Length: 486
Image (cartoon, rainbow, N blue to C red; front, side, top):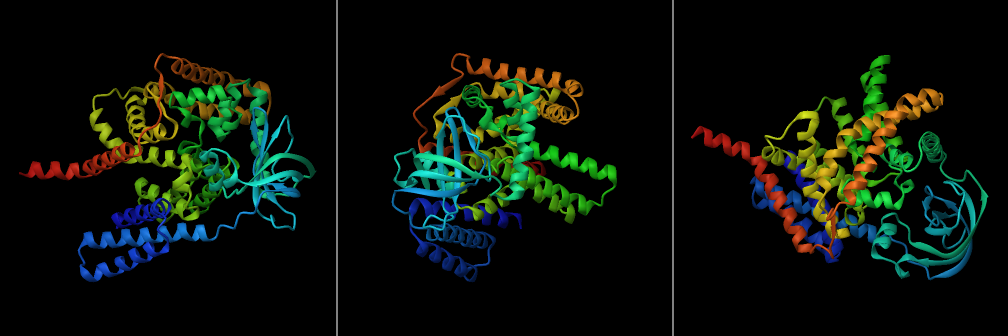
């Protein structure tokens, strides 16, 4: 049964890529669907049925992308407007000002459409502010900006961008009250962290705990990217695990029924992901965690690989541009795939590696994840980190302790500063250690290389080789067993 689930999920995502790159339209999807329906009548062999499932899933992926294309509203010409809008997402702090995502509320041709505007100088806008904005509104497709920026906006359904706009606030509280509440909690935590720690340590712990990467300075973030440890400041499965374990401890302590406890864990995970900004890596980790909770509730065995491909299917079904444009999703999926499927291969090669302090586990997981994400990073950024493995080995062992101490520090900080000092000192020491390791690693000679790009064909060949290696590893126990019987 599992092979059919894998086949369906891979086929659906493949259909989206086929529809996007080949632009063949509905007819190809219909043809593949009809062919798939005929195949079971030709043969009932397992390989034929798997092929039929793949073709059906591929056709559905094509239909999903084409349906998204059809439902895109026609772009309106550039024009000067004076219009009202709601700040529809958390403002993004930048070096020179602030970027706002807006949803128009005026009863005009732009009503319910979204746009972005970049404001210069210090600003005090928050999510849910109703504003009046005057400026030149242009369709993103018509602007002279990078393809990456266009993809970023298209992924989020934003079609317009303001140029040279003036903004004035009308009132607050016009957004979703639940989102406002969650963002309020987030900013309360961020403010408390800023009170307890100096920069850049406060921004780093904020990034590690709640994924607030925008508060981290550009130079520090660049060093994290160059050394291949930027994943440390992204919401991951470990953040979600800490929340689930904390809730589990509370449930156990108060004797809450298991079903209620699992439901509460799921709700808290969803709220946490919303609070941290709904990044693709966080959503991926959250969906897999919810699948785990459902498996526990039903008494089923949890398979991480199946959960990963089902999560990819669900996220692609929700937004077909996710596997195409979302770099965060691509990296998160590939890293998880490496840890799940490639780690056994690496583990066989590192059988003599020391297990002290979890070095072997960290080394195995890091090599497996790096092998999966490095070609994509080189393809997208042109950066080849030569120090990534060493930097990860030095940093990852302290991250769980750092996260735990950081969380304790914040909680105690709301009680009294002297109490928080108990966790603040070791937290500060570990943060300084991480920053120092990253800085030294980034400034080593030949720590990273900047190349033009990685050819698409070479990247595809690499991933095909990884797939063959994973499939061979899964068959290896069976092969060894047959040899032993001879």
